[in-house]
Image (cartoon, rainbow, N blue to C red; front, top):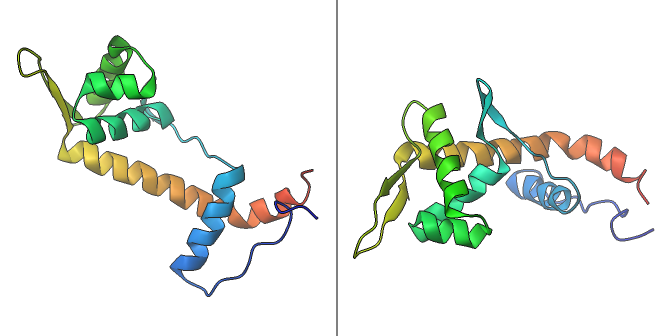
Length: 138
């Protein structure tokens, strides 16, 4: 039996058990949640990665570079997100001598946290089925 087929250890019930199950699922199963607004994808894995990069760098240019995308692509993703939500998720300030900046609004931080929570909840919901499915894998 390979390491991936071995049953998970059974930690004490509670948060630690959920984290252990979640960590095992993270290695093999990756949910891809997309939040739709009309015909647009308001949030998805790529947009969430961009929000996190903006939060870390405080710059749309740096965030785009970090993710290997063009500035224009990042700008369009931000515009789409901002148009889909009641309040903008990202605010930007144009460049110049001091360079521009981009920051997440409170709504942006909240949307990011809620999205990550949805991912975690989906992994936890999949845990039992994943245990059954993984024994069918090579």
